[in-house]
Figure (tube, rainbow, N blue to C red):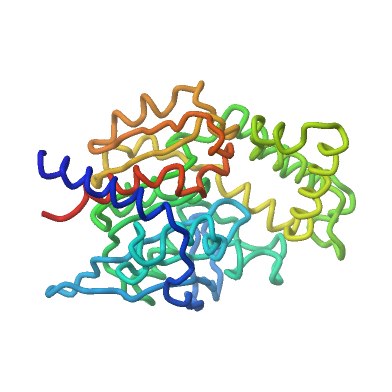
Length: 360
């Protein structure tokens, strides 16, 4: 235990120093695609060709037994893509030389989940005839991408933000011997219920109830997409930061208009329905005892999606043998649900997790 404590201290010091400098000098990201033939979803539906798009940074390293020891899987949130992690505030704080996930040492894997980014999704051609996927399907597809295409047979770390955080829990109990460490960010390991589920249902029904949606056969994005975006914006809002950013009526309305434009310009109504519906049967709670690797669950106190007053993680984490719950208090540095993409806020905990899960 003393060895782990000393290592944790050293990693915390190194982590803080590394995060103090931004860097974009990590190896050039490489994009690729892998097609899985006749992929069967949990619904029983089969897609003849399921395309999985991904971005990698760095090179896998194997030990004498052929086991990959430096692979890191990072999964994005709902409506996002793997390339979203290539921002200065994320990659610039983690992937550069000497930083916590230095891509000169680690093999970073950033997949586009099923239904997202450049992976197969309803808007490609099948529209509402696309298979009704769920989180288990998405994780299983990622596992096949890693093992069948990228040749990764072990993960040093699995981490994810929001939806990716929820999928981190799924990875932990579905493939408990496959990773050394887990770090779900901005998530809860229970069935999505209460206000969270209500907001998701509002997003879906705002589109489906719009006559312009035409059962998914629209030629232009239906106006219901804008109504759905209104709900989505409040899901990820940060009251403190938004008050500071928009302290007057005029600034508030301009702030809102800019975000609505940004979301509606990048989203597709059918894809959005599937993306939010995919969480319908998510529920790691019955399986938490199966997780073996050290797990740090990190949430922020101003997260409107997973508010701390629910008291859920305090109880559920007790069932994870090597689990730890970290609640980051509201500060000038937090950004509500979006805190999940700010390593400057939670980087020290990642350093500690890497130290705790280091092989003897």
